[in-house]
Image (cartoon, rainbow over all chains, first blue to last red; front, side):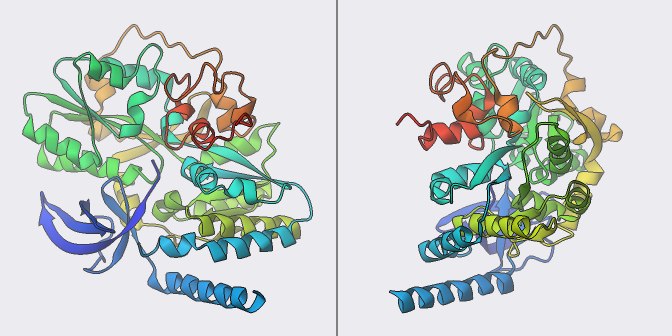
Length: 80
Length: 364
């Protein structure tokens, strides 16, 4: 139930008095409500649960993880 | 998929497992609150890769599992009414009530539909003005904003044939109830990342301090889970008890304030009964009094309910981390996903379903 998955915002529009969007989840697009992330812009990645974006992904923090992956694989290459 | 694949990186998983092995000097009992995390641990086989000193116990973070039997029986009674279109998240449909479940209501001709978002239920109500559309609003803090928004939208648009059965629960009071249990063995917690995406994590600070337990906000992918565990074990080994955030890409301390506002507008804090556990003070939300017209339990009077739990099911003890699924004598015998005795065997977040699905029954 508390599963939430990240997806990329590809369209933003008003519908039924709500700020809605199309979000792409790796090839599957769904209509998602953006009312809880008013700062969301096209191209942002949002964490989506029950048809609502509940958080925008923090690119800076995610980038740190990618750096960590690179460090780990460097370490792996060095030891193997 | 960006923001997922890099957190499933085998090299990082291996490196983290090695770091955990080097860190551990003694036995620690750690509870992951969220059933989604339980499933992720088992699905990726991480539980089998951890050093034997680390014991994972599974928490009550499965909304379907803790929704009281009385409310499920009420939902079944309401869904059986001819004027009702009953809508729910899919997980709820197979949860056993006292004598039947919502799927069986549908099989007998009831109009029971699965929705992805509660907004779909409001749209259904607009499209079927002569029907009563009822939505089963279960969930933890992650789901509360969506459920709240559906009611607020229905109010704004004057959709009078829409109502909800509210079964909203909150994590921090449940954690406190677990910590207050005399037989509690939990020494550290992985806090549920998506609950914290909505609520932030300030509510956990007094819990960590009062009960001297580390609480680490944790995500759902293998790398996230191991980072959460590593941080928890590091604190335990150092004798610390802090709240720490290991799910930085999705969670900040204050959470999502717009979502919290909607929750406050729609709901008030109440004592709530947890199936198999007990009534936990201030552990739930019900609709604000001015939204009573959207309360399905008031709109449809249901009488003569006689609830009856399975005498074999030990779901309550499992949900509190007091017993493991494999200790249940009915597990894989009388109780299977095809013939569930309790909700944890059907839910995609239930510990019993996870043990069954990933064959952690010590018999295979």
